[in-house]
Amino acid sequence: MQPTPYVMTDDDKRFFQDNGYFGPFKVYEPDEAQDIWKRIRLKLLDTSNQMFPNTRINYDRHMDVSELSDHVSRPEIVNRIQGLIGPDILCWRTEFFSKMQGEPGTEWHQVESYSYASGKAALVPTVRRDKTPMELTVWTALTEANRENGCMKFMPGSHKKWYFDERRGLSPASDYRDGKKTAFFGYHYAELKIDPSWEPDESQAVILEMKPGEAVVFTARCMHGSLPNTSKRKIRVAFASRYAPTDVRIYPDPTDLSRQQDSFTEHGELFDLSRHGNVLVSGADRYAHNRIATANFEGKPFATLPAVVDAGVL
Image 1 (cartoon, rainbow, N blue to C red):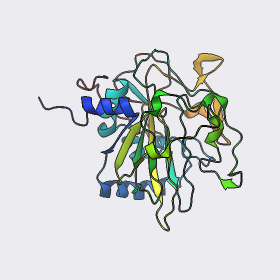
Image 2 (image 1 turned 180 degrees about the vertical axis):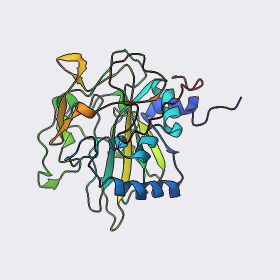
Image 3 (image 1 turned 135 degrees about the horizontal axis):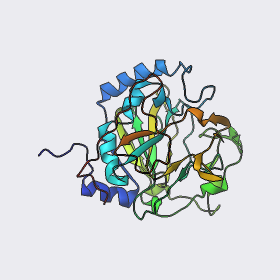
Image 4 (image 1 turned 120 degrees about the vertical axis):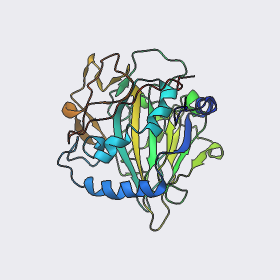
C-alpha cells in the first residue's frame, strides 16, 4: 500500500509542537503559482458576487473565485493539517495579504479567537484540547516572499505563552500612530501587549523566505509578523486560508452560542454574515454547529477530502 502523500511525519509534527509553525512546503510549482495569480488578480476586480462587497478587505474570495475554491481543499494543505488538528476540518475564512513597495512590516502579534478588532470571538471551541490547536492558518505565497519585499517572520515556541491579550481589543484604526504609518489596516498591535514594557528578542526570530507556491502552516498563537517591503519594484502577495476543527463554533452570537452572529465590524468595515458558510475540507461534520457551504457562488462544488488514516494527531 502506497503511503498517503503530503502527510506530516512524526518529526514534522514534533517540529510544529515545539515551534508553532511548519514550513515552507510546496503546494504549487513556482510557475504554476505565478500563473494562478495572473488569472485570479483579474477576477478579484469583479466584486459583484463577493461575499462582502464594498469593503477594502478581500475576505472569503474562495466563495466567488474558483481557483481559490480549489485551493482551500488542496491535499498538499489538508492532508498535512489533519495531522495537527484531526480529520474533520472546516475552512472558515480566507484573505489576501499584499504588501506594496514602501509599506511597513506587520508588528508582532498573537491571536486565537480573532476577537481583537470586533470585540466578539469568531472562534469558540466546544471540546477541550491539550496539545491540539483550535485554529490553523496556511499562508501561501503567490509571488516570491523574501527579506526585501516583506516575507513573514515567526518567534519559535511563542505559542506556549501569551505575550499579547487580544481580549483587550484595539483602538479604532488609524493609518498613522505616533507619526509612523501603521501596517495592518491601521491597527497597532503593541496595544495588546500584556506587559507594555516587554519587547520581543528579535535575535530569536525566524525569517521565512518563500518561493511562489510555497506555504507555511501555523497557529496564530505563535507570535508572527512580517518585514517591510523595501524593494523598488516587487509586490509580495500571499493568500491565507484559515481552518478549524468541526467542533469549533464559527462566528457564534455571544448571547447565544448556538446562533451565528448576523454581522461583525472589523478593520473599520461592516461584514454581513447572511451569506457566510464554512467549507468542510475533510472528514465529516459530526457536531453540526455551523453553516456549511457545499458549493461556491458559481455553483462549483467544494471538495471534501477523506480522513487520512496515517495522519493521526500526535
